[in-house]
Image 1: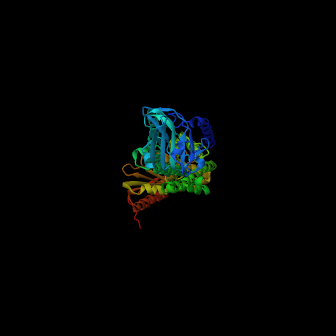
Image 2: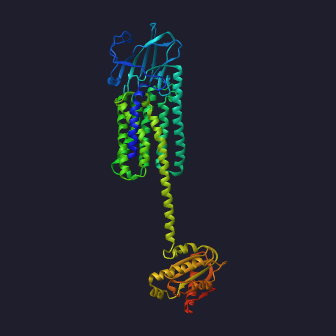
Image 3: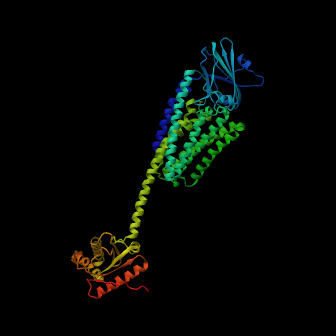
Length: 560
């Protein structure tokens, strides 16, 4: 979390240093914005009054202090030649119902442009900039005036006004198109890649991430102005509604991604409920703007800003809880979210009229979310790597558990249950040998139980290393061992006893064993019982005959 705070502080310092220069430019390509003076429309006032200078205009205060309504606006004195007809009047796209523009020439001629919200759509350029061609005239433009109706005025009535050349306009579209295309390419690539990963791995955070990317692409489509190019008949205010809806949904999906990215313990208690409520609120306010902005745009925009503020407020709580719960993913999360949180805070400051409108800030969401999407993809890769490591450890542990469950802990041979699972069902004739250490009670009394355990381990090693490949060797319990081998490659029990006699035992104690052996099928439980009873009878005969010997029986015992 410390790294995230340091980076966030550095980013805010960089923004503070960059702000004064950026605030004077619209797209950074076409010079400073014109100074605009403003006044609310009062009953009985006309454009003639504005042109005659009978309407006092405010050139100093913030436009937003007047609230929503109809407004007069005008530039100061200008001297801009437009004889070639290639000059363009540009301003930012804002929530409004109608613009009436008067372009005043030195000759006294006034060119009028009237555009409602549908007309405005046909003049949208990339970056959501409204652009009008200024008619050619031998005399220069000396002033521009506006009557703006139905302005929401949450971020201003008319912002970023410029007069630019056709070349500057084309260059702006080219550069902005490059920016949006780069973002779209990044988002589409990450979306396809992570959706394919989700199909394979099925982690919920991958699907939330894909949803966030899809909504960001939709937001980019509306906020860039490309939607106006694809659907020139759409109402510009409706385009702004879609923009609000996609931005709020993107923010909600981003928080949902954070909700599913961390371990469940991070959201224990009230934090999980708070985060869920903010996610629902983000989606709800977007839908509210889409459905009811024509009636309550100002109120819904304020609700949108407050909801975004609650999203920013909950992120530090998530980070703190993740730190307290010792989450493995807190550093990657802090790194990924530092930029969008800083940008979102500045955007909310703009929406709450604490920061003046600025083109770059108005378009910063896309850049910030692109950074967040890219770094979140790295965070996903990091988490998948940890999950894969956890899975590998779980698989290894499961294999160890299965081995321990099937193995006698003292001798490392198969235990009785695992031996029967492997032995019963073998095809063809099988050989079964039962081996019992002679006088093992005396071994324990002489060597102690530790010495007796070591004798068992030595006997197990002799049995394991002195039999053909594929032979099953098990400790059935106590000092009794069992071996099953294919009858085509039988074990010579006498040779096995000879190896046992020749093996050095703990404290050079002489250890012998008795063996009973027989052959037969081992396909079913009944076959096993018959084979075992026959081998056990042979073992009894070996012990009765003096021990340290082997007995082999030919027939199988009958099973009752």
